[in-house]
Length: 528
Image 1: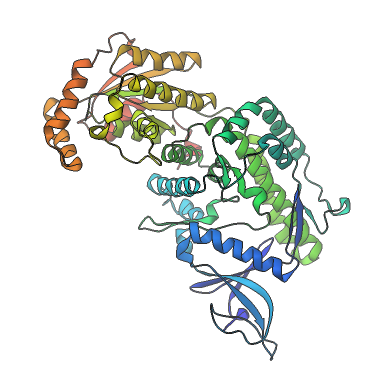
Image 2: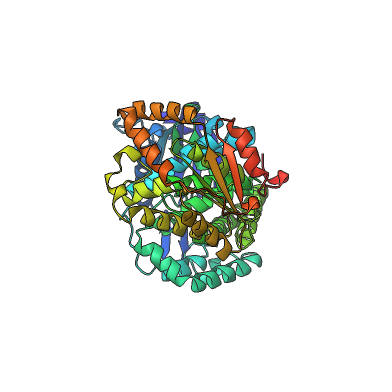
């Protein structure tokens, strides 16, 4: 049995954490909060037990290393308050329930890594892929019925304490009304877009409260995402997957890392093959930030009401709430980078995809890949590798044009959100390049076709590596390369300021510098 008084104690708005060297116990506060149609009543011990079990189940999926288990809190005959180990016989009165978890290193927490400069692109990609995998497995887990009505209710969602009576309603800052007006107007203008997302099975049981403080990444690249569920349950979890993405990216932006915020979204969109999230990204960023601000504002009021000695803690919550409200207000801002269209093309094994991914990270732009799009159309999930050597259906008449049509459609969704995009494809023909160029012109954005080239000697060496990777003879790959070379049309139809030819045998950063010299870059005070 563990005596809770022997642990360090940290109090949040709706829970108390007891921290040991290797173990954490989380107890829910007996609070009752109403928001919209959902009431979270944790005043009874059975309700707190159910809340612990709900969080235990979510942690089992997203953070298995914490080994979360629901355990009883017991008052012993000598009046000591102890926590029973999992599976041990309980002697005494069960007065509450706690979630027992293995303690993860604080240095692995994403906000700590951000502060120390170790939350890099590679780790963000791991987080994005972990989240995309979680969302993929949650397909069909929530009802998409009446998405607009549901969102309208969430916009007006105002948490109230006690029994939710008018007397218990917490007065919010005046800027909240402005936030809600913008969100309501956006929702009405884009009703069809929200309906299409719901029909595409984008509404699922997600995380609901995803912030940097929930994410842990160790040096080996293992990702653990702790459950939140501090106050509201399904009201926040049952949402479009973009809601989780938007909240975590907003948290990065709030830490003055708008570049990492955009890179994280781009990494998620690529991993999940979901570029249709972009038009709604800023709306959900505003919605989630406003919701978290309202919850923190309520928490501050609860601290203040509990005791005048809690004034400092209350003000900390108000300051955090104000920061979230600022984020919510910033959603309709115009993006900081001009939305350029970069079309990356080249021969087989020219290194175009490597350069495309690298420049995408450098400018914070998502990469819409023809290979990933092709694989998705062929039925793969989460960008499984279906290399060209296995494309049997890809050579059917009209399939190539279908792929490029879908690539350009995805790119248009990104551009519609006011963001730049990198399109990664062969672009073997003048017609394909012109279609990408016309897309940029339709949005009145700059266009750049980057042609990756390489010597025949280097190409053959790379094709040999692919043959080993795919366990096929090199002639399989050389046949594919020769066919593309025979179909290749020079890019002499493009103006010089819209065409850049690179030798990819040069260092990656050298080629990226050459591309970036043609593009806008992030303001220095918003990047690390």
